[in-house]
Image 1 (spheres, rainbow, N blue to C red):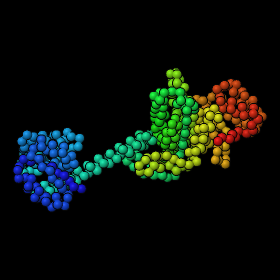
Image 2 (cartoon, rainbow, N blue to C red):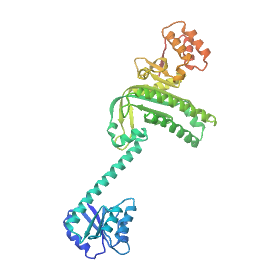
Image 3 (cartoon, rainbow, N blue to C red):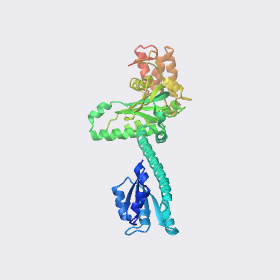
Image 4 (cartoon, one colour):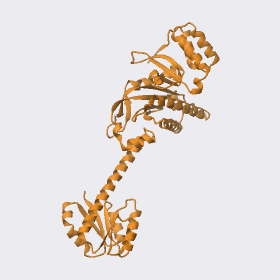
Length: 414
């Protein structure tokens, strides 16, 4: 590195003397000197040479003295490290200079050995400050990028240590969301209205994800792909995922009702949740940041989201997720045969505490147990449940399957 030093002094012989004393360093390319005769000329010189690393300035000069120059330099965004030169014993000016932000001071007549050591010390300080600013800028850029995916707490932690972004295998909970009839909505409203609608929806949904310290892996159209236990460790990731799904469902319902009152028919949000091993990390290389996950766990979560439209539910989670939540509150849906899987997947609808405590939940569980056991009493049990609770779409779904002569509780979903 070549350090550029601005010397500010009105003594006519100083420039030649400095160039003579530092000729070896100049020849070796370690330093380069620029000269000015007063503070005004120094400010112009810095404007012409913004790469100046440090300033060595006398105090007594015409037009603008060294203390006034120091004050101006400290007001600038790019503060220059400044060494003040003063007459021997002029402690009042030296004290003023240090209070105004001078890095160091020298006394006249200048001892060039002392000057060289002081310049070396100042250059090391400049390099340290420059490296600190570089690291801060990198951290700010990383934080801005990471904030698209992670909660503020996780983004701040990763901005200073991105080792967790490398592709690796780990267990996660994956959530997929989707909005029903979104394509029809796009075709029926103006682009301006769509932008307002979608931005508000995505903004509210991602804030909920971040509140649960989840990771937004992807936003595709109206759908969101969310991860828990990545990139940081979250031992309770299944619990977090279910709690997040509940809050996403509640917020999406309130959002839908609010826009319905304005005459806009926004579809219901469906949510699927599964847990298991994935490959997760930055798959975009150095130029494109794409933190995401791949594997059967991700595909299954997406298919559980789609299963909601056949079941009449809004949230569908796998048995792996339900089993990972201590005291899970929900009801079984059935064994779902998903495309690409050789074994059926037991699915559940998680319920909020107040809903789970209702007698209808116990009635449903009893009816489901009869259905699973092939008990002929399952049909009247589901019929009674639907009769008492007309809004229970899942009970109605199972009753319809019984009326159609279906046996067991399996269903094939592509």
